[in-house]
Length: 399
Image 1 (spheres, rainbow, N blue to C red):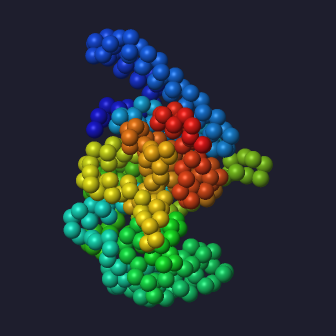
Image 2: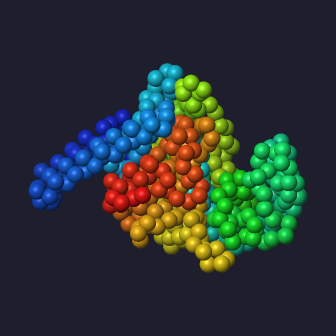
Image 3: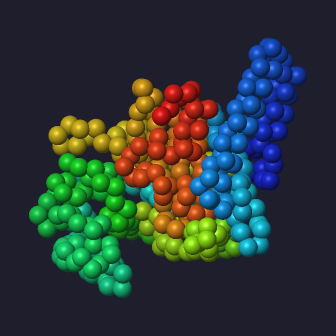
């Protein structure tokens, strides 16, 4: 990984790119006429994108956000917009940490697939077999064993007064054979494997799966397999306490819209699980993105399996693979994930493997996700995604 691109802070990335291209011209690495044109095109494209993001941030009433773009596995744009702290006027920067919500899921999937590669996990083993002696927590209640947890789930799902009962409705753990793969692909409700239904609550059960088969805590697994090897020093769970404490101190404040349209401080505490809870920056997430593309965490074959959409029992193509959304537009594969903590924060990562282009976006309100129902599996609902695809993936006709 080229750490030169990933360690520079508070720098104008458009200027950096221009300097690199001009340096290449002077060194005679490619014809000058081609590079002058390329230099202008790249800088113009980045400036158009910056203006679009700046406009969207204001239109969607997002107090602060950070955005990065990678092209050919190198950061070509990384910038903050607005404020990480509205009250104290602290600007959002490329290295500002945010809660990343469900962008935790691709990390969890990478850890689980690493366990598969190591022979410790089989995706087609039933959850009941792995978790038969595991403790489950439902708010303040601890339930021992999958069978007892299943009985609790059935009771909760039938109670109209419990706000999260609808999340586990039609989870037939008492009558159906539900596997790890069903949870990983969001096909565990109803007849397992038949219907896609995005469900972060049920995805969370994969935390216990990873811990059970590895005999390690989930945060240990993420740090050992991803965060420490990639030197993600602005990410929680952290490499050590010093890094972790600094990230928590620098983390963006979160906001919701007030009655008068003002920004009101908000919070959405999330305990770390396979579903959510990580904190990171667009720079550190870029390291993860590059490492995935370079097969540094898992093998190429495993990555390709993760980036392949699941197929239902009836042969229908579903919008989710193994820990990632997957869709195609005119033959071009898009691999992505979003995060959404209501009235608190939001996030998006969008990869176009054929173009070797990636968008990473973190925001300190829910404005980058809440209006777009991204859980339905269509990234084109996001205007941020459309702006990126139009400019960096040769999809000028993106809807």
